[in-house]
Length: 367
Image 1 (spheres, rainbow, N blue to C red):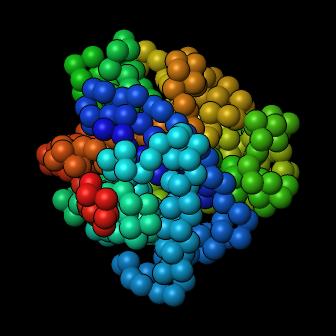
Image 2 (cartoon, rainbow, N blue to C red):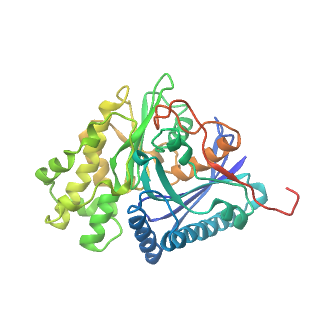
């Protein structure tokens, strides 16, 4: 089946749209990918909506959140149409869209997680059946609701020697361990690009630290780093997950721009190192995907602090920018087929469960 996956991460940089062929099990064939960058105005609107959402004790409609949800739906529909046009594929040939939406608050400790975006409206706008709201069923069943992509990571590494780990560096970092016996363990390790991006925005007016150049010019402040690492989250055994807002750049304020970037980059690397003892075994290789793999300083710090060979997914033929989007396409197919998308070792649910809400497109061509 042809499937489209859409991902807008907590870094708020844009929409990743991927077209793959998959059966939701062993067949995975990436076909096309595009990155739709948000405008500064859109990023500001989404960031403000997330700030508002975090003030609520549970998800609820408000003008600001409704408007942000309409923005997400509208921009995602545009991304789908552009992707199909570039790939030369008709909407009628695509079986499903996996629509993650935009996380504005993630509070599994309170029994909820909140992704904005209207799956039914997207299905109507694109003329393609759409699966949305992937995380809520897991949280309702007592799980963390994240990470969900590990089931796709497992499919990608099926033919690799194990144990192996896949590290996703988005706004938040998460690691997936796949054992020689097929054991699947995954959890959030800590912030990834989120704090570094915030620091770059505040100190040099950039969206991110391009290539890690700012951090490379600075020195790590060990006192600030130690204070940031003195957080109970890192001692908690998985399953565990984070909201992007759970850590801030406040401890680094007062440092020079380059030193703050170096310290926050080291923080990300060190939190990954702290995650390794929580895995069932030491992985033989660490494959890195997500935007953070473009940060050479971060990759060097990861190698130094973990003692592992750090390999960008692109080096083994993956599209490191598209893995999460591809994963939601893959999970959408699994949802249609009634297959589980979260597992005890990944989110902490008692047993493997499915997730996602299916929205059927209204079509008139007899499909």
